[in-house]
Amino acid sequence: MKYCSVCGGNVVLKIPEDDNRERFCCDSCGTIHYENPKVVVGTLPFFENKVLLCKRAIQPRLGLWTLPAGFYENGETLIQGALRETKEETNADVEAGELYGIFNIPQINQVYMIYLAKVGPNDFSVTSESSEIGLFDEEEIPWDILAFPWVNSSLKNFFDDLKSGNFVLRTEDIIRR
Image 1: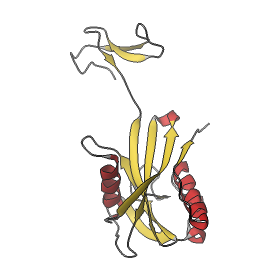
Image 2: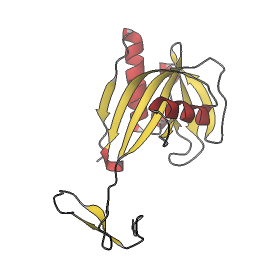
Image 3: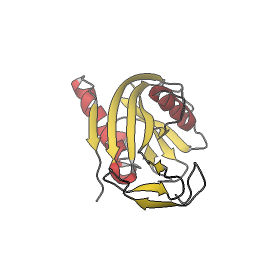
């Protein structure tokens, strides 16, 4: 950030009075610009014992497999955002279920909110964001070419829960070193 969104003045990174971390502060009008984590929403679509994965047609992680997810937009609920992202990436109209996973990724300032979702066996197709889409059982998952650590965790949790018959909300901190 270079300029204040309030007055257009220059901003500097400093610790404001009565604060404990650096913030972008306007030298002209005194506005403190707080930067907060971005929320990412998505689904873990499944049909029977298979999950729906997308092969990314866009960066980042082009060509790797993921669950449908993307940035939460203003004016929508978490579920609306998760369903929108799922539609954008898979062309699927899924039936949203319970919140299933919360992933905190502090090094990139993101929080992921992933919902379980039911999908029909043929209710999806490729989009501009996904070059391939398919249903995979546990043995068919391309484990070595998953796009993100949260996808790996989500899938492992899902298949463990599928075996036990008990789907529980999990939270996880993903720390990259």
